[in-house]
Image 1 (tube, one colour):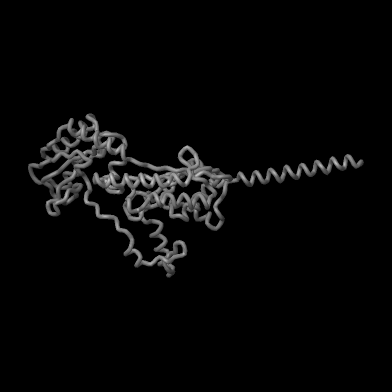
Image 2 (cartoon, rainbow, N blue to C red):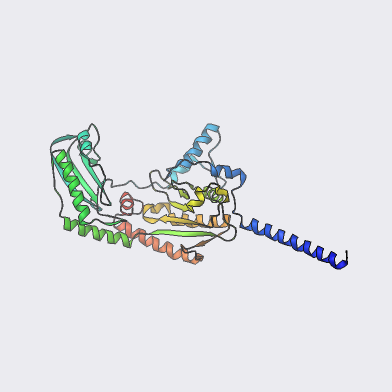
Length: 368
């Protein structure tokens, strides 16, 4: 074999080695990042569906710690002292509940004689909506002097029927108002009572005014976190989000960060490709971006949800090597966040001045 042939063989072998190494590097680079083995199993465990999860994750951790005789769980290296709960902000007591003239059409219904709660429940319409608007009937509890959904064993002389003036599907229209009248009249006839309906044109005009206000002051923020290089697996996303307090939502590909108090909607949501979440082998699925969302009117101002959103975005971006973008995938400079925060403070003030404070019962009903 000549030296020339030997040189060709060596050169060919070197080229082949380079191609193999390059392909291995490309494959490793493009392989979705996976959850670490130690925490991956935990991320893949079927989580209890709690959306919104009302203190579920924290309560479970406390229960397990108590059973094992271990101290309270630690967060970021600091022990959780039960006495610290005294200093935590307590959500203000809701002044309003049920039907409210601020966002509802209310028709008084006077009964000719006392009506049992069982009879009232039997006379209730089968659906609790008039068109796209929530519909409700309440009875006045004479002992407590409070309106409530009719209860078995109680007796009522006064009722009221109501339909919501507006929600995110629009304002109450004439057809929906007529459906409300029909449902309320049918209930009144069944319990031998007389309703008093307000003027339809006045209420429809009031609904349009409220809907215009709600449209002008509705804010739902969404930011995209996009992978800089290697994609992520669903388990990798779940693992990193779980470190920040997120839990599995009711929809595949959706995680939620519970609010600080029980009974409230989640503070933040994190969503990614539902098909990747439902694939037969999720760890082989590639997720290149996730969406962090905040529904401003649904979360109490005291929770400081926008500040929390910024913290979560920064932590996930650093841990997962991602860049924060707008919904269209355009990177966002850090300077854009301060003007948004200032605008949100003004929005909170306006909602407070109209008795529709973010996170209140009325705000959650109106902006739904």
